[in-house]
Length: 431
Image 1 (tube, one colour):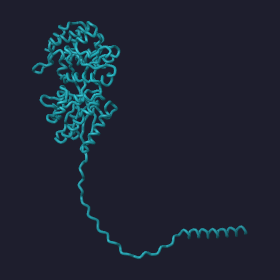
Image 2 (image 1 turned 60 degrees about the horizontal axis):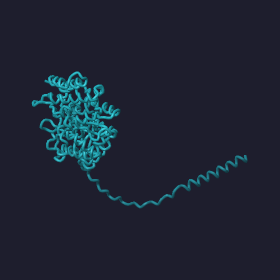
Image 3 (image 1 turned 90 degrees about the vertical axis):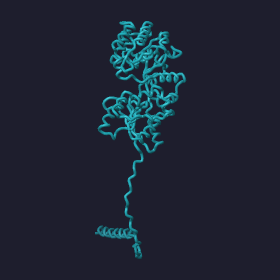
Image 4 (image 1 turned 120 degrees about the horizontal axis):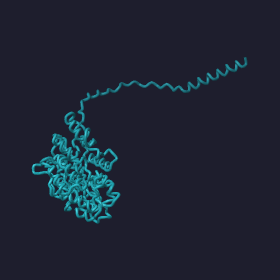
């Protein structure tokens, strides 16, 4: 009973404490606010339609081959990305869109141009970069616009002589070359005090000469075509038909025979070399001379060898230049103006020389070569090579003349025929 009474007293005390805490937490009731009439709110204005603004930037599209892609970790890619971004900063109303495609074949640049021109013309680029052979096909198919009158005169005058021909179709210019590559000589600086430029220089040195004597698909390599051209031979008659001249070809084959007799050319070695890369590998094993691809040399070999022109009969530099050519696709005059502004931007000497050197491609302008960070002697050699360069051989000429030239070359190197006999047989087979 005593315990029961204690519990009752405690419950009463706690109830009073809770009531006190709740009462203390309740805020005082505020005094009533006097009533006032609300201020009238003016009606909202009726919204009016606002025209949707046009695009702030115009896309300027250029298609590039994989070899020039700015998206891959390749030499010069970062420079190209920066250059295109700088163009956008100078031209804030333009946005350069770069689309990279395969260089050739199905899904390649030319293939896509043809397909899109029929199925989806709206996706065609403003500019495209093609090789000279594909450019001619695209121009013949009506996919490109003429550049006559659109190239600045100062840029035209800055081009090396071979460069305009890379984009020429008859009397009309459809392309402006961007970069070039060709065959030239690499030689050991410990063996020569100056580049060997003539047949006499090569024969008197008595050192090995490595060149692709095998050819491709039974077609003679550029080296033999260059020797023939350097000896004064013509590849086409007045009617544009492929031809060979017996006198110049006999001289070339006689040079091969003399070089074989003196040990400068080893038939066994020469007829095992089918590419300039194989020539370079052999050059690394023996001091002497090797025919190299210019891009390979300027990215891989220029630290261990010196460049020189392909030696010819009289020492006059001759080369067959290939490369990549800019072409105009858009027919809209304003977009053409914008596209040509981008072309001039890419060929600006202050950047162009640095970019081409970083990629290993050769510049097509004299001012571009002046921007190369090389010795004066090397710059003079490259300039002489580019000054003597020609456009690549037309496909029908190479296909028609390559096999008889290759047969004559092999017959002389193997000792099966004299130079005069082999030359006469080659000329007769063309006729």
